[in-house]
Length: 106
Image (cartoon, rainbow, N blue to C red; front, top):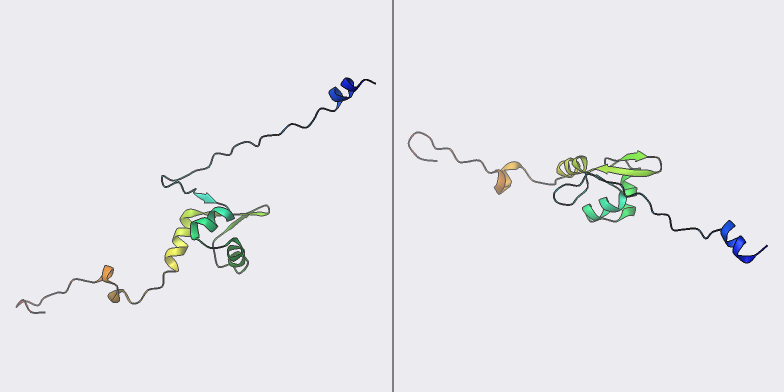
């Protein structure tokens, strides 16, 4: 058998390109559905901390096969629920206007 014949029979494997998956991305460049790496970047915490939070059911996550996905709107809502604040009257953003009685005194 000639050398050129064997090369034709067993061609070198070519680099297969993966299909590029189109994902919904907001105008800010943040995807609507994030994976662990993207969520880690979004929240500014490590991946191991996220896995720990998933295990303790402290963060909203969806599991697809062996991978986790996070819906950004749910993560944003979850973050809002985790706000640590005082009473609404202590925050200047939520101060209510002082009312006056009929004579203009407070």
